[in-house]
Image (cartoon, rainbow, N blue to C red; front, side, top):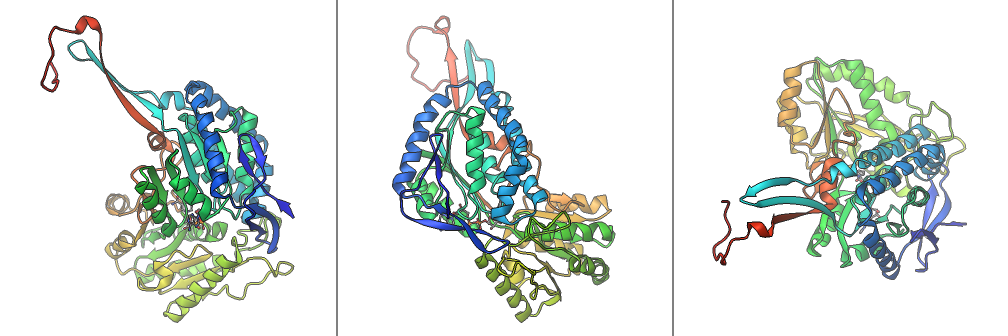
Length: 499
Ligand code: NAD
């Protein structure tokens, strides 16, 4: 059995806790490796190493730090296929989708190469007589990134890129379900010239996370994962005085107006609803056609597309649309929620329950499901299913559709399909959701904007990547300066005011 490691101080380090988790190949159901689950002592060692390395790294000028990231980008491109293969083998997503996972992380690293510019402070010359005021952005120290299984390349890079560019050291605690790619990223960072200890990868579960949350050395925590864990980490991290941002689950709606291009809308729904087996926080999981006539026209286009989806292993060729889900537990949870939809009265118009793939009977495959006539009280609407299940709720009017998306407890992404600019504009102004697509189903902003949901999809006040991340991973120091020639005689006992 292949045994994975931690990556500490530039070395692969064998786990010593004696605790392990199985890493599956979701396509075959086989255990392909085991990953060590770090003890609090192992976490403490990684954090200490990071603290030592950070002292030096903070003093390396931003342009030199950026050059390490430039080289890292070159190495990511060099190893793209290798990374994608390792990613698909543990996650199950198709190879083109795995390359996209690496690519969307790589683009954030490219943005971070702008660190010298992004870290510039502000300056007010002659703010008062003989007085200048300026600000600088300084690193926080050692920070932690706790990441989910569904983007094992992209999200660790969303954390490590800005943190490292800003002069911090970071300890990444990847998902224990697919930890190989984060370890490969750490190796590539070393090869790119990152000093040992600036990026540590500690594998583990709740025990390792709690050790990071309670460590007095860790200054900030960036988390991405499910909402209950996001809430827990936010509360415990904040109670320990850390800067914390936690990104959680989602239930992304797509509103289809009567004037939408129905072919475009149906194509968008199959891609965004079923791509990566629905295991994306920006997947569209709810379709909201406005009016029964629109719903009927949409279903006419959608049903044959969903029935034609090709499900298979990542080795199954270019025409595979999506692969298995990540674990047997995920598969069983999806089956339970599908059953609840039927029991609670939704109409299952495409039934994927009997899906089997010859030769892969033990894999964690789930057929494509499509519900129609669901209502807002049903579990399939309220809960995140995180599988290839699209739920349709027919809205009588535009206002009803808008209210539905706005009042759902999650508020990550939302899309509207329409040809009418007024409707699209009104929607973007009023909808209570963080990221909006207009005739665009998965509106994950590019790296120079930023990513963050609202309501129960995010906790904390800054978004991930983009300029916000440079704020999150630095603190501002403001200097008020006067030179001796400006000093006048005598003490001043009242608060200084501008002269
Ligand atoms: P998860 O919450 O199960 O795990 C995320 C991380 O938290 C992992 O590293 C895991 O080891 C750790 N963890 C799990 N249980 C813990 C506990 N009890 N205490 C402390 N740490 C714990 O999430 P997942 O299943 O890996 O990922 C899927 C979820 O992530 C979905 O809900 C999805 O919507 C969400 N997600 C959100 C975004 C976003 O940016 N909003 C992006 C991707 C995924």
